Image 1 (tube, rainbow, N blue to C red):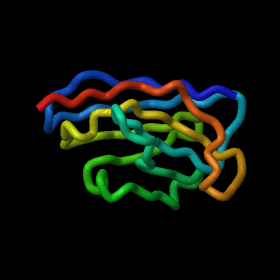
Image 2: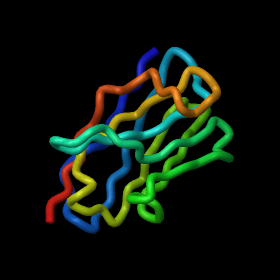
Image 3: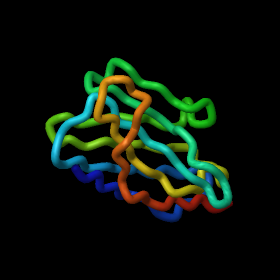
Length: 117
């Protein structure tokens, strides 16, 4: 099983970025994005179920970020808009091998997002 995240970069405040995470080896009921800012603990960003009927966001990104997935491509996305400097972090995609949506045991390598003010 491999999760390959991409799409990070440097963007000005107010700008947009789209992250992608290609999964290989199997499909997952739940996938999610987490992030870790410098000097801080990793935090939850957004989660989506295979059916896309169940989606959850952290309060800090609601209304600005959109999580989606292409089941045919087994790829997870995170569309980020109205970016703020406090969104600067390494973003990780993760997958839950079970069906709880709370046990994310598979992780991608992370992609750095830097938002300048």
